[in-house]
Amino acid sequence: MGQAAPRPVHAPMQQFPIVDGSLHFGGMPLRRLAERVGQTPFYAYERRAVTERVESLRRLLPRVVHIHYAIKANPMPAVVQLMSGLSDGLDVASAGEMRLALDSGMAPAQISFAGPGKTDAELRCALAAGVLLHLESATEMERAAAVGAALGITPRVAIRINPDFELKQAGMKMGGGAQQFGVDAEHVPAMLRRANQLGLAFEGFHIFCGAQNLSASAICDAQMQSVQLALRMAVHAQEPMQVLNIGGGFGVPYFPGERPLDLPQLAGGMERAVQLLQRVSPRTRLVIELGRYLIAEAGIYVCRVLERKVSRGETFLVTDGGLHHHLAASGNFGQVIRKNYPVAVGTRMLAEAMEHVSVVGPLCTPLDVLADRVQLPRAEVGDLIVVFQSGAYGLSASPMAFLGHPPPLEVLV
Image (tube, rainbow, N blue to C red):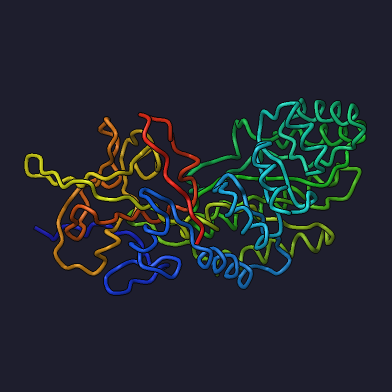
């Protein structure tokens, strides 16, 4: 019989140094960071890692590309403030996120508001602030025009297009087929004519095909198709296309077998899309909208081992953290095939004695699992467990009220 195929492993977590066997984060050992925070569990995000990620994009991507931060990835106010200084704009999906963006000091002209189901109150807030509305339907356009007329404000608008193609290999598809997002491409010309009749200040298009993609070639293909689609639609507009937001989709490796996005390959494909746009519509500003890719790998979730428990030969590390804080790492209330995020014993990074364990939380549900049957250094009560890739869609995307445990803290260091 042949040898069994090797089990896939996580991409190396090399974004933070290891000194004397301990993970260092924000320039200090993990235990010291925990003392600084004052409690476990907690989320920590590192300024250096975020800044380096944005700078690496600036170096590799075409210089004319504008980088916007999607606040939904991590709305911690300190993170939004940091991103307002590093990015060219902020993208929001609610009035609450818009307030965070405005409080950061970002110019309203560089804030865009997307998402279906905007209420009249949200439309009034957005128009009064002067941000760019990404219209998701013809009905929303009529409502925005009515609100603008009542306030005496001309709405700044872009039309979000639901294209007739999708972002292949995306972890989450948001374009192509029937979608709650955007206006089907075939209906955009009529909507542009109506926008002109309503006297709206048309500025451009928003095309967001999908998220969490690790295939550079698939992203490049979608970006080129997005530029081509926008150019076809722009001929129906009465005003020139000032901005084209082609979304993001840049993924990060979470699970065994996944590898980081090939950024140089992606940059080459984007250069070709930029050349096409500049040749046909040279005054159009090209925007990419990124959240996860900018912040996910710069964050960790840290919890403390409360107990070692052995049940019928299996070892469980019971911690003070769990799915109520980090739903995605737990498997989102029960994936069909559960996959582990990269997890480590942050206080024993170089230990040689290994064991197979499951890391579980304190909640009274079998779904409260942060790591299922993984190989880790032997951990004792008081050791700190680290869940990597936790900077995006962590705390704000988790059911903190579930079973009434206290919330974790967040720090930017």
